[in-house]
Image (cartoon, rainbow, N blue to C red; front, side):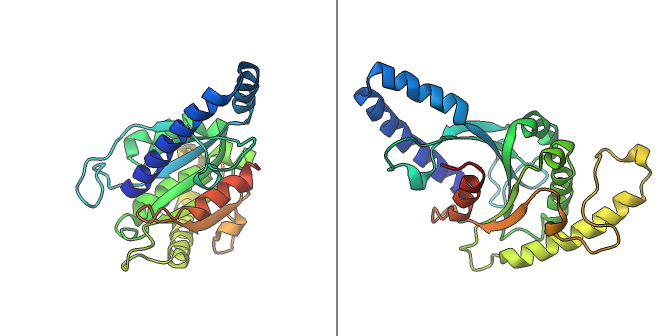
Length: 236
């Protein structure tokens, strides 16, 4: 995930330079119109990152435990001419202490990207399942049918699990968690909704909102699935 963040920062820096050049060439009236367009077309996307419970990555480096956000133009659209809709991205670390922060952003979100480490997936599977279950059963997510992308990062690694393996494991473990949550009395259930079709094994196609699985590689800057997901929600 660190590599993915680095790539986003590099892209952002390049885009800032391009924006400054564009501003210098744009008349005041055109610039004001462009700013107005940006204000009304920016949509919020949430990226949920999952790390170990101590807040560190598997390399042992200290990870930010605060949400961070910014407005970006998709890398594949940076050289396009004409109107380009920027994306407001909020990056929420998966630390348990920050889960309540997600509630601040979900009501305004156009889409949610749930990032999992394809290499370290199994050691973090239990924490991922619980967090993903909370996200998918959130009243805002269900009522507004906010689309979700489960993004498997680091797929370029030899030891990475495939997205199909990760999907099947997530569905299998969510099915178990759903059964245990259903057995709990309603007074103890924090989420208003349950996932899937009662009496049937869970799969993501049963969700009221659309949930897809994609792949990414921060080290090779391969974020095509992420960009496709964003543009599927926010048309250019």
